[in-house]
Length: 480
Image (cartoon, rainbow, N blue to C red; front, side, top):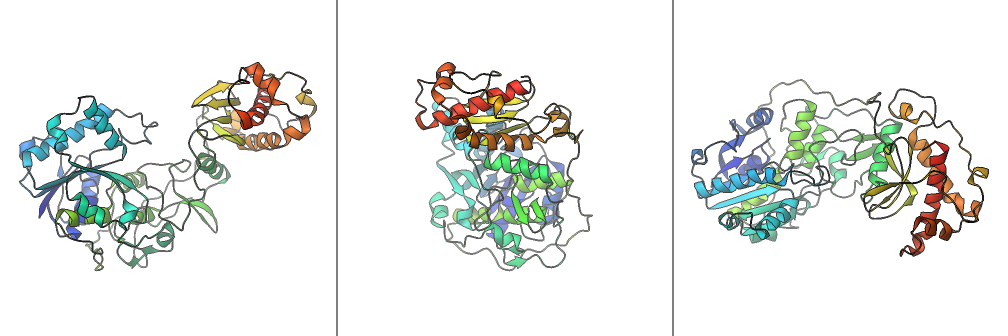
């Protein structure tokens, strides 16, 4: 079979199809740096072009059309799924228009899972052309780890490509883990990382603050459910993303003897199913983006088998080779020491955190530092000094161990005079755990005064009242 690869990026589709015996005769990509990576590894350069404006009659006649239109507008990591859907659909429509023109025997569009719901909603509203809907008879969300990738990565596949044949291969491959990659193996192709392998430069381990930011974002996020910190090694990794910082929820973080770190470029590429000698070009950030945006070659390999009506078989064990070109290694990002003066901070108080985005948090956003109550995604500022009923004066028991007027300067890296905001979070967490016994806390007066006494909080009442008491006292203490 012959194929063309639209939005070809670093070449994940092309490599997987080649390993399945499909000849890729053309590739098309707008990002020049990605075309260099593709050309270095696949023996021919993609056409450097904007697919949106390229005439649809300019593509060759082939048996198979594949493509991964940009996913940023559909991704749930884009401002909480707040991307421009209409803008993203322009590329989806163009892909299907090309299919209409080329008339291949098979075609498959790949993207993030959310696109499946977006297309269904557009169809229900009558905004998606019926002629294009007919080009998507097969639709499914698959997890690439079910096809042998050492990464849990869910993708939406749509088109006409032998879906039943593909799903019949599910679970037939071994299920490698993050640990396999971290101990220097390439479970996709049966190689190890011995020898001259690029992209293995490790970042510096996290400093204290970076560790706390990462742990808080993963285990105690104010809105989203908790996840493991550090990442668990005994199963496939979480999804490798295109962009993430040293302090973010998206980063895959592992613990080593000298501390916590993010993955190297080569570890990310191996989790994505690229061979150890697949070379990437551009800056460190460019390479991270190419790897994170790629369609995993092992998954493309299985799609290539399904399109041809072939049954499951292992990836070729011969390994992947190409003539390596010398290119200086790129340095990983270094820890930041200073941040903008207005750097934002929000961290949940662990023992006052609930499920489904409800809980108490320390933040500097409303305005200045203070404790807020978050309910259903909205953060409510607690009034200063708000406690009533027969409660004793909290000042008799709570006593701040530090000055609290320099939090912003410490958080922005401009001062070391005073506590770090995470020290304050830990302090409030400890007080919250001890406050019931110390104060004989009765939640009903507080909840009634807030208008929450009649709500169905039941077992949460004491926890909510405890947070109200602490938060309002803290806000009075620092003058909010």
